[in-house]
Amino acid sequence: MAEITQKLVTPRVPNFIMIEGPTGRRQDGFIESTKVSIADLADDQLLQIAEDWKSDLIARAQDIRLDRRFDAANM
Image 1 (tube, rainbow, N blue to C red):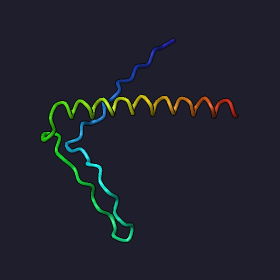
Image 2 (cartoon, rainbow, N blue to C red):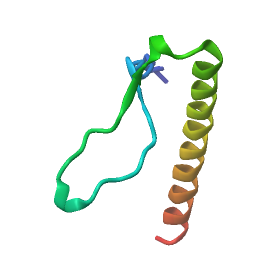
Image 3 (cartoon, rainbow, N blue to C red):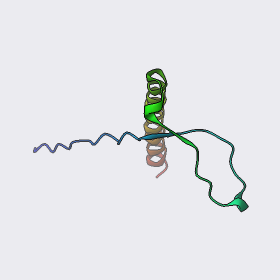
């Protein structure tokens, strides 16, 4: 059997990180979120963001796998 390989592309690194803040009122229209340049963050902050992203990535993949198993079991 022939083997097919694919090269995965790592997601792009953003130049800015969004800052969590209060949400605006719907009638005020779209308000762009406050953001900070990654160059302005300390290395420990960047590492924490990377760890959080890695944990979220793994959790999302696990959720999708569970959804697929549930869907397959209920077909």
